Image 1 (cartoon, one colour):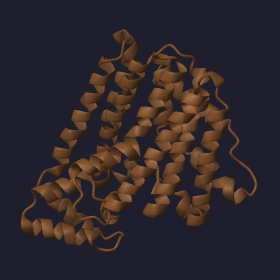
Image 2: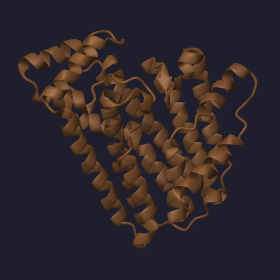
Image 3: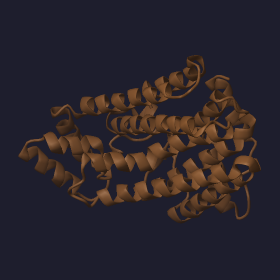
Image 4: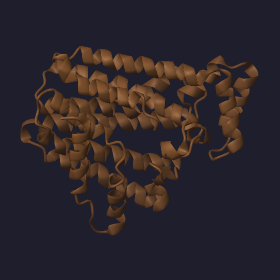
Length: 323
């Protein structure tokens, strides 16, 4: 199966799910965010892995959709913490309703994700459930590290990479592993496909960090400069701190000590310093390294090369995306 066929199956399946309920205020935001589409990257990777290892994608659909519901739950809660007005070019749940409703609806989505896993075939439901529980904890750990960094002055580049591994990459690794579990792949291949997802996820998040500063809002779907407005110490910021002169380093620290909130002058000043030290290209090079590492992980999978081509092509599509 190709990516378009798999994504069509996913979209049709999700479109036919009933996320409504009573009270409507709790469930309407769930229907709202699940109907937005997005890249559907996580269920797509899950089904691609299952298909690659010779599994039945129909058997994998429920856990794949569980992962997508879980991912959207994390977005709902992220947007509350970031006070973000836009997601995928549309109002966030937090902005369209309020933080209390967004909090409860997000909680409900997490529970629904677990309910979906429990509806999978008994022969692998325990393994899938254990994997989703593991990744749910890791994502929360990553989010807390992200929050901690906002008030820490000594965040290292390695600490940032570990944070995005937890916050973003582990979910990609886990959905690929879940696809392999459903297809009954052996432990060696499960590890290789998981590692592929970790490296692809690190590349993906670094790319998102670049888009947040330099993307086109009409394409990217949310306002640029959000990380700067929120004083998020991304790899771009940390690398600029490392390379900057004492004067520029002090300016950066002073700007990131300002209260959260959109300030166009602050954003432009930070971007000017980033440009001065070429951090965009430095981060792009690191992103490319992780992308190539992910392809090496594919090489370690015990399958004929033609079976791996669809994941190689999908990884290349993510690597060359513009949003």
